[in-house]
Length: 254
Image (cartoon, rainbow, N blue to C red; front, side):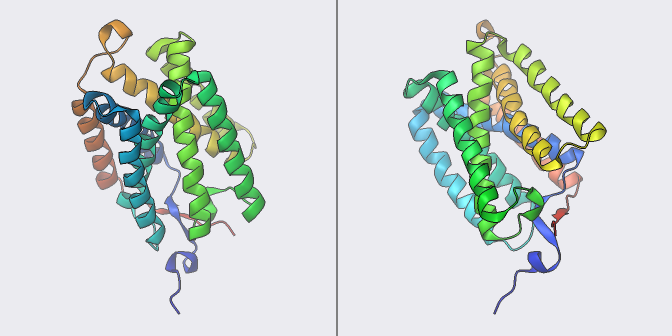
């Protein structure tokens, strides 16, 4: 019978939570915004078709990730990018095409995210990413990430548009909240698992508003950059970070 070497060597299938992890994560979430908008808006395919395309990519990526027995940086980050792009088009479809608005979309997605974490914890007894080393845990992990990425898009749009903070103001808000989470990490004993999920969720709206700032028209508060160019630059940055800064798998919790 085949055994899972990841489980045997005490490593999980997610990377160590280092500074480079968070840099790549923010770049990936920004790419999700510009890439998702490039397909749904610049290509004029619409949110529904864009969601269908990225959903297929996400399903393929997450299947490969789960079938891979050990942490592979390229596979992991391709899957993360897939969740951010499908999260962008799905949130835009729910917020705009379904007419429930940013507040409604954010509320629904927050409930789904909390439900995913609660079911994960109730089923396996932990929602720590250090335990992500088998297919069952990975399914919970990626479903939760999917909801968090979609929520982040809706939340970013809500603060930038409905709340009137604009892209720059929203970036400052989410950046400050991330700094607060970092302060809690270094100077308090608050649960590291709770702080991880807080930071992970907050990087998505930060990336969303930064992505919008890059590609939205100047009269809407953006820089009016090409979505294709912005996406290509962000993709190159992610690839460079992966190649230049080797990442190791996180040690599995016992």
